[in-house]
Amino acid sequence: MYLNKRKIVLVGTGMVGMSFAYSALNQALCDELVLVDIDKRRAEGEAMDLNHGVAFAPSSMRIYAGDYSDCTDADVVVICAGVSQKPGESRLDLLKRNAAVFQSIISPITHSGFSGIFLVATNPVDIMTRVTYELSGFNSNRVFGTGTTLDTARLRYLLGDYFTVDPRNVHAYVIGEHGDSEFVPWSQAMVATKSVLDICEHSDGRFCLEEMQKISLEVRDAAQKIIEAKRATYYGIGMSLVRIVRAVLSNENSVLTVSARLRGEYGQRDVFAGVPCIVNRNGVDRVLELSLTEEERQKFGDSCAILQESYQGLEL
Image 1 (cartoon, helix red, strand yellow):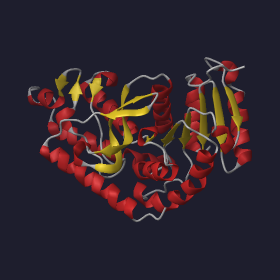
Image 2 (cartoon, one colour):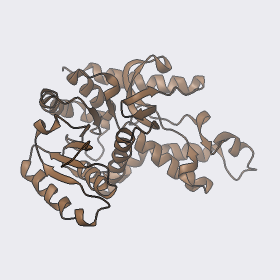
Image 3 (tube, rainbow, N blue to C red):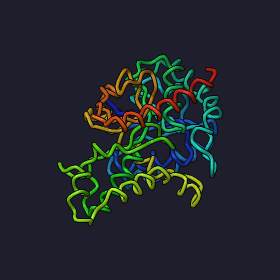
Image 4 (tube, rainbow, N blue to C red):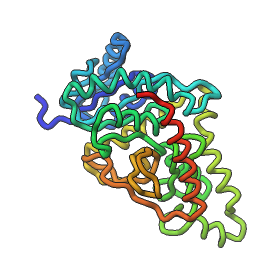
């Protein structure tokens, strides 16, 4: 018997969804994990495969294939369903195809009586998160996407490698669209308590701003490089999902760059974009507005404008 169980429903058992599920099992993320997919047999096979590894996991977990009715008492519904990104295809090109998929998903979830939190990973994630918000009718703090959490992790990894410091001691963010218009506000990038810009300026040429720009481009283009090499990305985003869900279930008040609805922050309203947020049991508790320079605010505004324009063409 499970008392106060932590229950997650995963919609979509493709590579991203199952990377999340595998990571969740190995990190003892929850007590109950339900796999939902249009291909029920696939979901049953994935559940069976995961269950065969429960004996080696750090804690027990109930894993099974289910349907949308299982969302009734779930804490979090993680959506990874959708068509996959093709080589050379931008995230925004996926929009109309995946919007149609979501119309068939959100309605049965809400009709189940689900009252938890929607976490979206399907690309283009900022727009698909907004689609989920509009279709569900939920309060916006309970609907958010992975945003630029993975991009931020990539950034911190590369900066840690460049400065020879543990990435966990690098405090820098990628914000805006999870896509081509994302950017790094370098004015806010820190190694411990020291500004990255100051480190470069006083390093006698050891570190330079030109390398910072190369790193930002490498972060932006990382997904396409991985797709070209192995057709898809899934491990990193799967672990990002686990990190976000843990922040919710453990009521951590962690700062994560999720895709959240803006309500006046940075001069933007109603658009969903990747920004640093405090994430806890309530979902997005609040947006932490960075002190951007005028140039950075312009870049963020341009990124949001792209997202707004893309969303306007949808017919929900």
